[in-house]
Image (cartoon, rainbow, N blue to C red; front, side, top):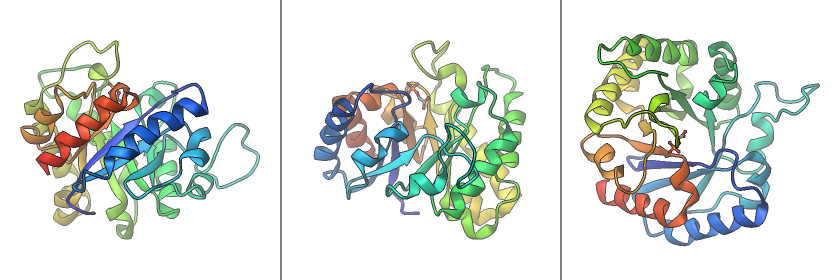
Length: 253
Ligand code: PGA
């Protein structure tokens, strides 16, 4: 994977219609080409994938995909389907889905199905509560091992991790995370993956930070926190904010 900062916009269940989606996307596309040292990815609701499409300066990702490729699974879409719209990335295991009952077992199956389609997987991990004693690290390890424990080595370069502490995500965030804490968590994640699959994987795997990132705190997470990129929710729907984050990431690369 290139040594660019990876900036991913997760639009979640927004915006409500195709014209807004096209408008936000085109604003981002028109400036993203200036930032050569950034890999820019937008993950819209899947219904908008066909109208946005991959483009040279902004890649497209899906927010979720089921593990079967087709069949009697009402309401689901598969990795094969999203791939057919030039999608390059797939978010898996976002806390908002885990909260609705998505298990580690299901997440692991979705990862494998996405990898087979040659999608780059952004595995989201994160703890519900902040704690100063590091008890949450056990949970992070478990989420990593159950998600990636048995994937073949040939897929390692398709893996990206996003650490998103649930308590720091969204407008109801209870607390603000710090770059220093992320720097520690990033090293922990890399160590777990090195122990699992070898030093090379641990060193090379990109670890992104997510949790209320905006133009004001992006630099801290990228520089002090040494994040390999950012997973951005709300600010990715505001083109001027998202473009500012891209500009900061470009300067930090
Ligand atoms: P936020 O969302 O930036 O709005 O906190 C991040 C995420 O959940 O991916």
